[in-house]
Image (cartoon, rainbow, N blue to C red; front, side, top):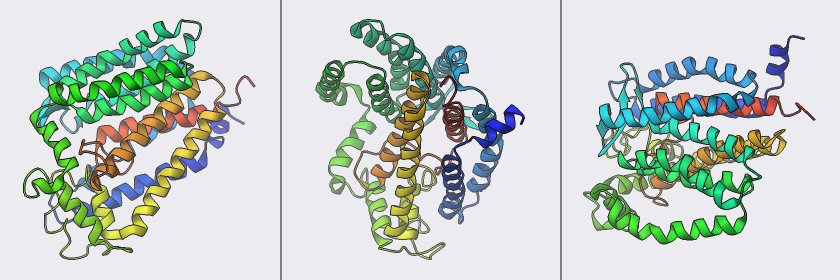
Length: 366
């Protein structure tokens, strides 16, 4: 049997099925959220999925250990993208985070985070003999440079994503627990300083709105208030597809971001508690499958990559759904595989390709 065909047959088909199912559901959800508008976001999303799927299969069938050679170039490319967005980026919602590339808008912070995961995996795998303090300093340097560039944009959501990803990878990478606890306590102690001195006025208002959305329901609290009304009005089984006079159809949900940031609000309104639980359960199963891939990985590099990717996906999912139900502040993070966004689809399918490669090659060397 040809090696390519053999590798293809070894794919994790449960992971593939969940990925394709959520992608298809995402196209449907985007259509459901925007069918009454002139722009066909759902068709653009479908085009990006079809463009990126060949990349997914190529990455899946390659040996993931190519990252030892490709991590640094991707990391440098991510840094260059972050510098470029500062110089030429398009400003949206108070942040200069996007580069207009004609047919698509690209967010370099997404590439930088994935490239950072690759670079951290290689470093933590090869540095186990170093003193913990030196390893932590190197991790700080690897993460700190892109983190500061993202903070300058400022993109608070992407900055938050780094924290659980890096902590989880350091834990799996062998950093002693006492050091991790110390880092976590130090970070918590610095939160008041960051909130007071490091946030823009609109970011600070997001924090205060999260703590008390009723204080300004017609202003800063409008989006979260309407999201809660939409999800609550869905009840147990929802109002149904294209139901008339919904919060979304009447324009109470923010039309500019309802198909990415507030996609769960629309689904909650249309499909109710049952639909919300089904979607969250699908993500939960997805995370369990990825964690199993991490356990089955043949080496530390594969294990660290899988852990970094699952924490990236989990954080995006938790923050996106959480902000629609007032569990977390509004941060502008998309829901993986479901929210609209060409560059995010590309980065996500690239990550799933790596996961498939880790699974396919899990028996190598055993």
